Length: 301
Image (cartoon, rainbow, N blue to C red; front, side):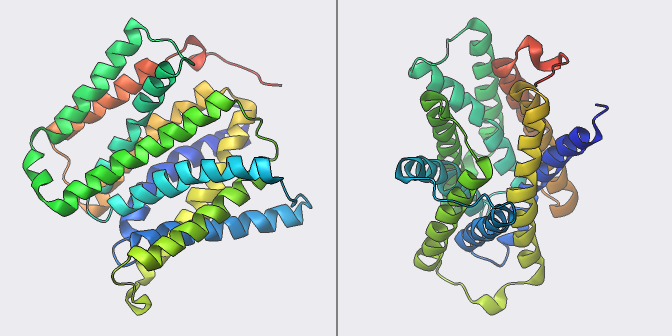
C-alpha cells in the first residue's frame, strides 16, 4: 500500500459505503423514502453530467447500450437501493446492513442455477452459515413480524438484495464491456432518479416539504455526493490497482462499520444473537467468495 491514492480509495469505499445505511436512516426520519432515493440519484446524475461535460466525454450511447443501462438501473438502483431506503423507514440501519451483507448468497445460488458457477462443499458450508445467521436475526424477533410495517420493511430488504443479486448475475451472464463507466453511470442515475421521484409523488402519503429537517436534507446530500459519486469513483480506481476479489473484502468492513455506527449514533439495540448472526453471515459470505489470490500481492497493468 505504498500507493497513497490507492490507500485513500480503499478507505473511502470502506468508510463511505459503511455510513450509507446510517445516512439513509437519518434522511428518512423526515423525508419520504422514495424522495430520498430519487433526489439522491438525480443529484448524482447531475454531478456525473458535469464531470462528463468538463472532460468532453458526454455523448449518446445508443439504444442497445441504453437498454442495458436501464436494466442495471432498475435492478441495482430502483429496486436494490430504493427498496433498502424504503425499508429503513421501519427497520434499523443495522438490520438493513446485515441483510444486505447476505446478498452474495443469492448471487452465488443464482450463478449456480444458471450454470456460470459450480457448487462445492466449501460453498455449501458458507451458505449454511449465512442461513444460520439469518435464523439468529429473527430467533427472538418472530413476534415483531406481526407488526405489518416492520414485516413490510423486512420484505422490502429481501426484495432489495434480490434486485442486487439479479443485477450482478445479469452482468456476469452477459459479460458486457463496461465502456465509459462514468457515462453509463450517468444514464443509470438519471433513469433511477426520475423513476423514483415519480414513485415518491405517487406512493408518499405525506410529503410536506416544510417538514423536511436540515439534518435529513444534509444526510440526503451526503448520500448523493459521497455515497453515490465519491465512493463509486474510489471503487473503480481501486479496481484499476488491485483485483476485484481483493476489493470485495471491503464489503465485510462496510457491514461492521454500519452496525457500529447504528449502535453508537442511533442507539440501535445490538443483542448477543445479532452479533452471532453478524459473525455467521460475514464468515459464510467470506467462505463462499474465498480465493487464494485475495491476500496475494497483485499488479494489474
